[in-house]
Image (cartoon, rainbow, N blue to C red; front, top):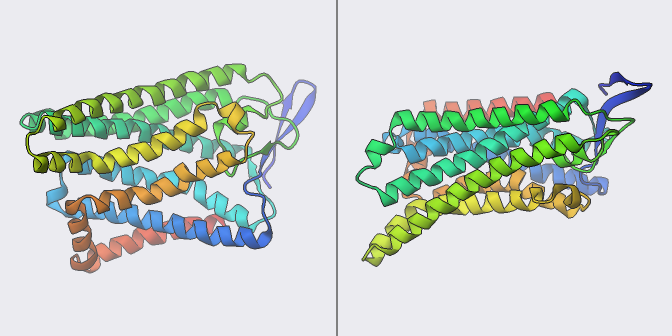
Length: 336
């Protein structure tokens, strides 16, 4: 147990947290460990394969797949921030996490969540231009613009996380605080300090409003114009083909936005319910697992590239997959 002691006024605060996680019988904890371990490793494998397929197939060197590769890369690290610690806690009686470890986990979690919100909005913009202005698409969505938009998503995620951490990390926690969650999230952390956290709550609310509302409005506006453009296509075959190019992304958007909005709409009230942990599992574990499957099921180009990567690339591609897989297994082993 790593303990950090801070002097605050006339009392001493022991800075480490206890993650309550999923309080169940030991046998069921072991069952959950194997289920979540399989889910975690499968998520890494799926997203690694998509990245390799896009990188190795020239036909997929397009803006839509460029953003998809960023989404896959983001979600590999997104699940890695949370899953290893959660898996360790399933096997351990000591569910403590140090102050620095908790703040680090929270920082990267906020970074990846904010970046994904923005990246999904950028992908909606890409589909909007492709369907509503197909002739001007190569002129508007250039490689330079794609790089700028992708970099902007990562930069905004890092900036938002940094601002939030400035206010959360300086809060004073007393005794042995218990976090009613399986990872360090903002809302449970803001409910346990032994000093007024209203300023941190206001900053968190404002930034969450900007990061969630602005991309959501962009997605809604993009798909409103997309649906309008598709309905003007005279042939049913043309409408079906146009809709198929954005159906996968729309499904991913609905899954991610609905689960995260449910969780963060009224966080201080909702974190009193254990059912909120189940919803959190959806967007931290299940959605990253389903996203590659959704894109593969409805996209023939991705399916063909994956088959080529798995079956026809030879030892080099398989070696890359094994290397990536071994890296994450080693990372998980170090946590244990």
